[in-house]
Image (spheres, rainbow over the protein chains, first blue to last red):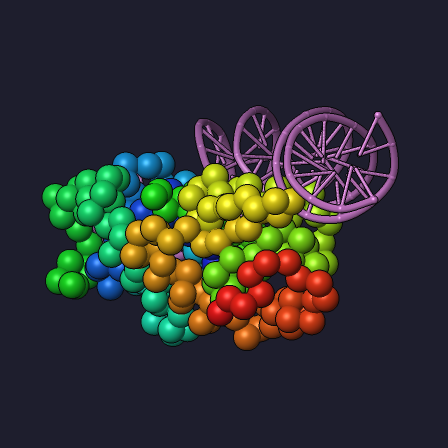
Length: 115
Length: 115
DNA sequence: ACACTATATCTACCAAACTAAATATAGTGT
DNA sequence: ACACTATATTTAGTTTGGTAGATATAGTGT
């Protein structure tokens, strides 16, 4: 993985918020992310596409839903960067509120039992 | 430190190359970086200004030269990100060639004896 | 077939940022 | 005072990338 596109992907607030949630939930569908971040669905989809394009996330289709997860085959140094980032900023806003909003979302599909 | 400006700073090739060199040389002046990267001096200065603005580097003036170093007071998670990046991509091009070009530079000023 | 939900794509607009080149600032030595 | 070196800033042009909104695709249930 090239560092420049990686860091560019990490330089946007919407993408970082998605990644921060994904880092703690193994997989989430678009509607969960849309709810947690309270942003328009096309915007979320657009940014998830960007994350997928650089290889940071992958997706899985199940029925009507598409579940995203952090790519489990990331190079170790990339994984370290993600972990360091979540450690460093995960308690701040808006990340904390996003996690809270997600946990309070009613009618969540599938993978609720994930870590 | 905010993550978005940090990652945006890391998303440019010129800035990454400067940081990679600084990560292994404690301090370097602008002319050393300009020589190592073989880029126009105003371009190097401009990008160093960007790195300084987000707090990734600081500088020290000595006579005609301005020495840059990685900010020694970076938050731990930011330091982890820098180290992971250098570990992950430091051996690749153009970083390896930059280090080589720096080591072969004649008439280097001041801090040559740095690690 | 139809309505509904979930997601993706497309279009147009706008702002941020990289680049190149010229020029300005500032320190040094003669 | 002048020439020279090192560095920073400014300007203009171009591109990249984010946003909003509309629309398309696709799966589900009736």
